Amino acid sequence: MRKRFLFIFLSALLITACATTPVSNRSALILIPKSQEVALGKQSYNQILEKEKESEDEELNRIVQRVAKRITAVSDMPKLDWEVKLIESDQKNAFALPGGKIAIYTGILEVAKNEAGLATVMSHEIAHVIARHGAQRMTQQMLLQGAMLSAGLSMDNSKHRNLILSALGVGVLYGFSLPFSRSHESEADQIGLIYMAKAGYDPHEALNFWQRFSKIKGDNGPPEWASTHPADATRMQGLRGYLSRAKYSYQNLNVKYGLGETFNLDDIKKQDEAKKTPDRPEPVPGVSVETLGP
Ligand SMILES: [Zn+2]
Image (tube, rainbow, N blue to C red; front, side, top):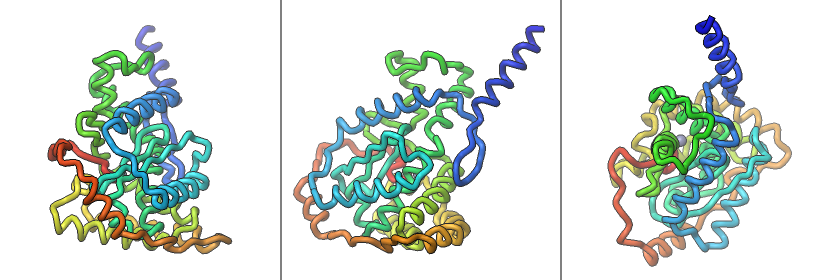
């Protein structure tokens, strides 16, 4: 009798906990209530931002906010409390936390080159949020540890805090977040490509962006963000597979921005040189980033 009750209870839990991801239509097990996921994302975001410097470049901020607005508006969660900050740093990075908290590093703009390149990064991050990859990872961690913490999961409890932070992939000490799994990465690529196209940016630029990105990896060793991302060939193949659907959305739009504005890279570099902070801790290999994408 008890067993039967437990079975019914667990089945009910699983049914209510299975969320279907928009665009990719995959189902995912999520045992974290959305309100809690959002609160945890926000807390982690604030912790990371305390250690970072926001860019004061008005022009770049204007473009970043414009791209974010266009993509979130066509996303499956236009009403989420989206927040996008431009961090001044030569890291080629970006990250996303549950609840719509996103950071773009000025270093990645050199690779983005133009608005459509930035839209590639931004839509990929937005897709991680919408697919609730952070909450999926928290759920995995909870199940692994046999912890049914969904009621009362709180950052105030130090045991919970470690679990939450490791699941969100936030290394608070370094201000980076951990990479997502390959399946989450390719799902974010897929969803992101569609969003980018719907927002009016030429989706073909996503392929160019990832090509530029892989070239840079060759130069200075892998930027943390990319080192854990899917192999380039796999990623390019995946993107090509989604491209016709994205192009279809793009072609049917009344307003198209193409590649958008091109960034003035010299300005970014000069600012980076002038404002380098040598006392920043070095990232630990394997600990870093969905710094763009991780
Ligand atoms: Zn990613």
